[in-house]
Length: 244
Ligand code: TZP
Image 1: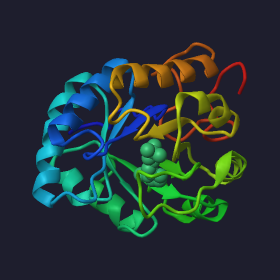
Image 2: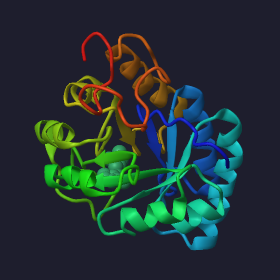
Image 3: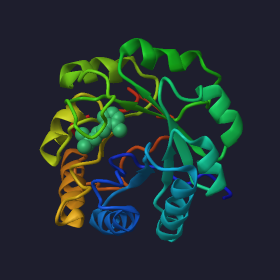
């Protein structure tokens, strides 16, 4: 890869191989969901072997790169590099963000999961440009991630986004109907698994979420809102628009 690709986190699909019915189902789901308006994709499969993850990641890179949709790899910075993905996403117990950034270099995205205002604030102490985007949650209880932390709810999400120096994408039990509340709470996007994976019509499911973000952004639609680049002015993570 060369220059860093733009990452709009508004409709952020996180894959689940089991919910999609296997690796071929992941590729089919991602293809349909991107048709529906998914703006970023995260490859997540903690149960996969390294070889399986690399094979699936390469298939997704081949699908997404021509479409200009960024592919981020959950946890596995080594796999992100091996498949030439657009970035990686780490949790509080994964490789630390400074080491991850050192490996990724400046031209890939790095996301970090947080659940508390303290964790969000702590990114300000990292060297500038270490992390680009915070994943905040789980907002609701979720069956998708068995070791997820306790759900924080929408009010607490607002406290975390207000404490964050970076744009935030919310995750955990989210549906299209939640988008207005997420926007109100200062999130720049919704990261979803089961709202899209394993749905009979993943394109329609993604479209519903994309339309909801377009509505709260004042009609600018996917691609018209914030990216994971640092917000130039105002409150980070709050999309510009009539209601912001
Ligand atoms: N991290 C926090 S919650 C979660 C992850 C990966 C899973 C979210 O899945 P769903 O199905 O959208 O609740």
